[in-house]
Image (cartoon, rainbow, N blue to C red):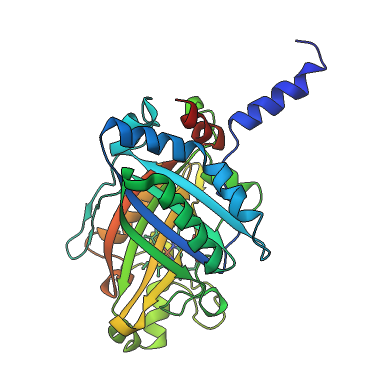
Length: 324
Ligand code: HEM
């Protein structure tokens, strides 16, 4: 290869593996749209077309928004992977594995496609969802659609600042984007969602000190409490995964959601990771406990009502589906 063609080859390589907007900053609003794909060939063809035009749909809305950030990441779950892509699944992609602890269960629920949409206002999100659903027509069945909002100071509805320990800079792609370990899927990211409903009255009846020991951070100023090395561990400690290679981080973009008139207050958990086992390990430590049966006490006030695993492939992989 001549020296002049090197940069072009490098650019091609990066276009092939360019991730979706995994690293988008925390936004003021978000939607989590979960769809089931119908299994007949006509529906699958429509789904491939719509997935293939994801970038165009995003551009169409982004160019019309004057309030900054607008991103959408699309994930495909294991059940529909083969039928949609006609390719073997990414190395670690499996259906969400239920985690049954002595007291609480991380349940697995249905869902073939995830649209994780982030923006500074709900208006553009609704417009985008309308266009996507119109394009799908009756090829999909919407299963859930949750509108998340940013609460005071980036707090969740348990009133703790959420998202602090997220990786930044070069650590962010290293923790979230698949690399040479699975070359066919380089540039992709595993995505796990869980929908939690809080028992607000029970949580609010706890003292601030108890709440802080459950989370592992101070409520007011967000400073970390020391890690417990034995006995009951905090949420923060149970979700810290360390081995000989060091700490394994994930990217979270949890959003509060609520319908006060129905008494519904929740946290929509979304985690992006390069290695799915990292999130699976966190769930195991939260629900089964470390040591068992000392589960994460956040679960005594938060019930998991959904759980699905997806893979968000590179942008090129997604757009190529339109040509399949
Ligand atoms: C009810 C649902 C949840 C709530 C309200 C919640 C809230 C929080 C809060 C307030 C923190 C401390 C501040 C921060 O670093 O962001 C935190 C940390 C964290 N959470 Fe959660 N979380 C929830 C579920 C989960 C789940 C399901 C996972 C993973 C499977 C998870 C993974 C983590 C991680 C990795 C950290 C950072 C730990 C560290 O300090 O290194 N969380 N969470």
